Length: 384
Picture (spheres, rainbow, N blue to C red):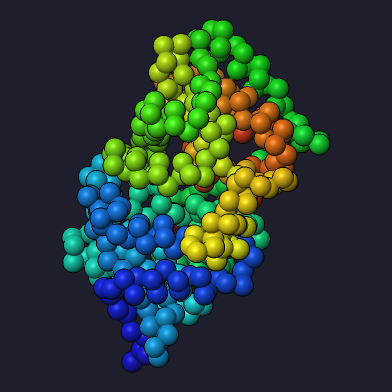
């Protein structure tokens, strides 16, 4: 008989224990970046996370002799299931010690809950939506994580395979060197193409005078509409509604340098593409020990506004409407961001995770000096 107990998270105290388990598991790891406590509490709060309007979730803890040894969230995104004609239960926020029995019991709990809800497949790690953390790291364990990606130990995917889960989908992430000091590559092609499309189509970059303009001018919805339309055919994507857009805006606007919101417009002012970057907050979040209050804000503020020698630029999102992807709109984004990154002293940029079989997305980096330095995937298993 197993000495491991699987329990449901029912109270706020248990929820905090659920979140903090990963802090303890990775506290001495120099590459892991913990989830911010306050943000994660909101993620699992139905009153604050609008995804609960079309999702349901159950959180589980694995406990041995009174000590937490694993955790997992079971999630059903009914909107995504309807769009993709699937009956998937997702598992996310999964962490566990290197004990196969712990992992098995956590996944069994997800599978049982999903089966009770009529689901026929278990897949993960995935969150409520594409804007949450997703994908288990399978390569790049010696690379620092970002604030919006998962870090895990090498034994995680080994456990998945040993328990009969198979690769469902894969993503890659790139380290893109800022074009200077021998890394110039063929960057001038972006500037050449940008000038051509400006003259041919009248495309332009919108220069924001303030963050207030971003919100008051309706650019949050315009930009995230581009995300909805350009990501619509990507694996498991479900369209953001206005409540979700507002939630993400409130989360990221604080950290955003308006100069690194690169918005491409037509001559008529229609937003057709966007790139969103922020300075890396990974080290700052580590120093803050994943808490904004009472003193964590100091480290984030220092990284955002007082770091004279920034190293890493995180590229959170890049997207162009499908009908403009062959017209050079993305070249304007790169021609806008590259000079700023050089001038501000960045050494390299970290791309968001991209589907490994998404040809157009992979091709956009071809004129830059870059390497694939992380790989991740989602695993799945049929529920019988």
